[in-house]
Amino acid sequence: MVRLRLLTTLAFALLASALSAAAASAARIDVGVYDEYAPVLREAAAIWVADTGNQVIVHPFPHSQLMESPAKGDMDVLVPSCNRSADIWEQKGFVVPASRKPIFCGRMAVIVPPGNPRNIRGVEDLDQPGVRWGKIEFCAWRGEKLLKGKEGSFVATTVDADDMMDLLAKGKVDAVLGWDYTVAGNPFNPVVMRIPISRYGPELAALIPAFVTPKARSPKEAGALVDFLSGDARAQRVYLSHGLMLDDGTHAPDDDPDVGSRMMKAYQNICQQLIDDYKITKGTAVDIGCGPGQMAVKLAQMTDLTVIGLDIEPEAVEAGRRRAKEAGLGDRAQFICADAHSLPFADNSTDLVMSKGTIPFLRDQVLAVKEIYRVLRPGGVAFIGGGFGRYTSTKDENQIRGGRREAWYGVDPASPQASKSAFPFPVLSYDTLMTRAGIGSYKVIREGGNWIEIRKNAGQ
Image (tube, rainbow, N blue to C red; front, top):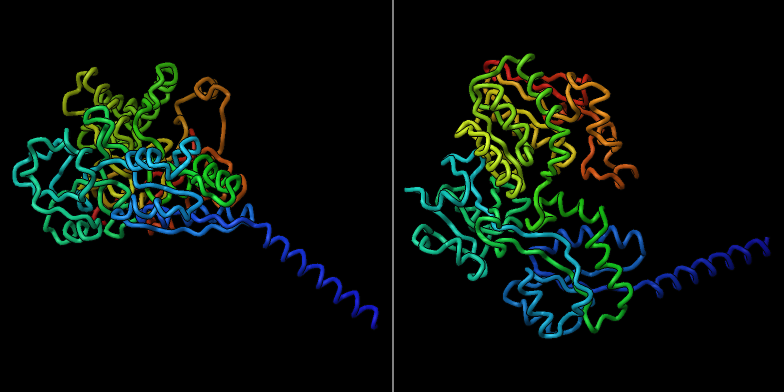
């Protein structure tokens, strides 16, 4: 019995020693970050902490201390407000230039109330008579080209994004110009229309980097954290879940002519299926997640519908507009940059909603489905999901896929498979999704893919 007690005491002592050694060997990484980004950086860093056993302390600093805080030299990793601040930090020696890694991107955007009551379609409406514009203050040099001759359009300017969203919610302003990240996750859920840099200049995108500092106490571990924040799919999923972008718009949208030509048959087949099944050939249709606009343009060509292509990427929207112009469709094929989680359309305004391949990229699928239902007219139909439609043969599908096949439906978002997926937000069950959205008038369609048909009955 005495021997057992001794062995137990020895085991506990060894365990305590091991834990103490592990704690002593764990690195502490202090991260100085522009305060707007602190919540999302904490969430992403927590994954790295769980992986490594190291400690990360996030220290937010306001815009007014962008130069003062980094100059103190007591941080291991620094995250500035934008690429311009990053360049200045490099010049002043606050950071190690070679350690610079992009983590996410801020985009200048037009922000309007839910439902877009003034029917604003983008920054081109800055000159629209009677629209009261607000501005969330930003570096003046970034808006020189955009705002030249238009300063008189603004009736309110603030530094605090929450103050401006309060003005927007109370109807004191009709539209706001500001950075998309300043309103990400705002409970008001405004419509965010990002501005294309191809038309208004690259300064309207800000690639946000992370750096190791020259005085980092554990340079290797600090570098590992920067690498994680920059390149790990789980960290990127966190950024996307907060409504942030990963691309600064300098890369062309996915408009590969070879892929487009292979996909065009599937787009035509899906459009024909919609026409045959629902007989909706006049009125308004919306293609959510339209990309460069192939399917939206095809539906407009095959019907008398006015088709509105909607995509979160402003560069994709620009490509869609070019495609519609080349097709000679005039106003019957329109394109707008907006987020599926807050559609820029009035209640009961749309006859048909379609969306192919967008669901696994939606950070809040329940909210997006509710938005789709909101904009449907009574008697309207939504057809959303993924696949190639029932008119596409297996042979054609295999040719389109080019050997690539990765599941996003029927995948538990919390599973290891999901964490390695190219699709950031896979779907476990449409039935569960629709139940959570509170929509009962739907049908799951397995023919030709994994689709949901949603109907809005009269009086709903």
